Amino acid sequence: MATLVTLEGLDGSGKTTVWEALQNTYPDAVFTREPTNDSWYGDAVYRSIKDDDADSLAELFLYTADHADHLSRTIEPALERGDLVISDRYADSRYAYQGATLAETDRIAEPLEYVVDVHEPFSVVPDLTIYLDLDPETAARRAGSTNKFERAEYLESVRENYELLSERYADRFVRVDATQSPDAVLEEVQTVLATALEEQSTGTNS
Ligand SMILES: Nc1ncnc2c1ncn2[C@@H]1O[C@H](COP(=O)(O)OP(=O)(O)O)[C@@H](O)[C@H]1O
Ligand SMILES: Cc1cn([C@H]2C[C@H](O)[C@@H](COP(=O)(O)OP(=O)(O)O)O2)c(=O)[nH]c1=O
Image (cartoon, rainbow, N blue to C red; front, side, top):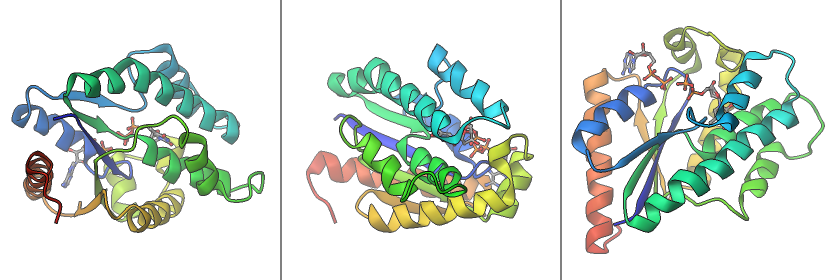
């Protein structure tokens, strides 16, 4: 059954570790990621990430352009085929990260709402979003603070946005404690995912 699952969380929260491990459990699923790493839109995003002086609004639209291309090229065709799609980051990353970046200036009145509204007309809402929750200090340490988005102070406001999103979209967000060992995190994610897929196939939703 066509299902879109997204993994979200701060840099260093363990998304990629989980995403890689899930490939053994779900060998027939489509594993994908944002920013994409197989298009020039994704290249443009990575170029912007490295630029400490990048314009925050321009950056939002670069990420969003990559998302639009990702949808039409990968996500929508996979869902039309009836595949399970598992994406390492997706639209909520924009709501949380660009919501936080734009809040650092007063160019946009309600940044998070604005970013959500930009996506609303064309994006596909995930069926399940697994949120790996981690404190910003540990996240920054694990991530090695290699880019401008990985500062603990900035990650604190990103985390606040993720908390807001997990309350607002409680129907699809499931929080997993990412301070646990890698094995424990993976086990919990596997359970959450298996339960959601089972509920979907039997049409139940508790
Ligand atoms: N549960 C965990 N506990 C401790 N370290 C972890 C855990 N999960 C991942 N790591 C390590 O933290 C770093 C970042 O993990 P990664 O999966 O790349 O995170 P993300 O994709 O969310 O940035 C890696 O060195 C990884 O081995
Ligand atoms: C997808 C996305 C990522 N980002 C940021 C988060 C990361 O710092 C950076 C690169 O993402 P990613 O390569 O997923 O980093 P990581 O594996 O460390 O989580 O881009 C945004 O700010 N907005 C977005 O929409």
